[in-house]
Length: 269
Image (tube, rainbow, N blue to C red; front, side):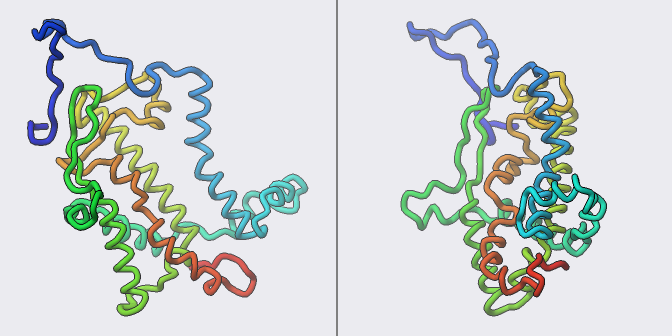
């Protein structure tokens, strides 16, 4: 990383104006350096059960009129089995995977290729190229803050499609909701695995990595402080601005009632 991308920490001056000759000792920054059994069991539980908890609630809405307890009671009484419930639920489809791949690729394009111009128009809005916080290794990364602009462009195109272009149905997300749920989980685990391997093989900055010695905790909590690809693609910035499905979902939810079938269940692809 060169000087145009980050600024390294300099030696702090002493109170008499002279530079201190002692090197700064690394602080115990961020999350745990050592993992206890309680944290480990929590991490393993989240990795194993979190996607299925989401599926359970969606399945409850789809098959049990949003009753959270009825599926469990049916399983206990023997009126239903896990396989019978799973068979009645929409599964992964390649059409949903195609929709999701196009959506994420479009958001990556907006994030990487269109510099922010809204900060030139909206008074007080802080966008464009900005410095991030100083990392534990003393780096200050540059960020292209254009999330609001991506949101505006996405919604403008969505409205234009719904009213003029008609490239796809405005209810495309809710029509493929459960298959898209599987796609989001697949992508989440794929990106997490890539970031985990990247931290070992080619970290953005080795000094900003934290290894606990526990593979499950490292996988769940992350190793790199700011994992990046290239100069500008920052995993944290891209992932935490809700680019995935919510802009389209916020527009398709009002049309959900009109897309539901006569049995009042979620429409399937």
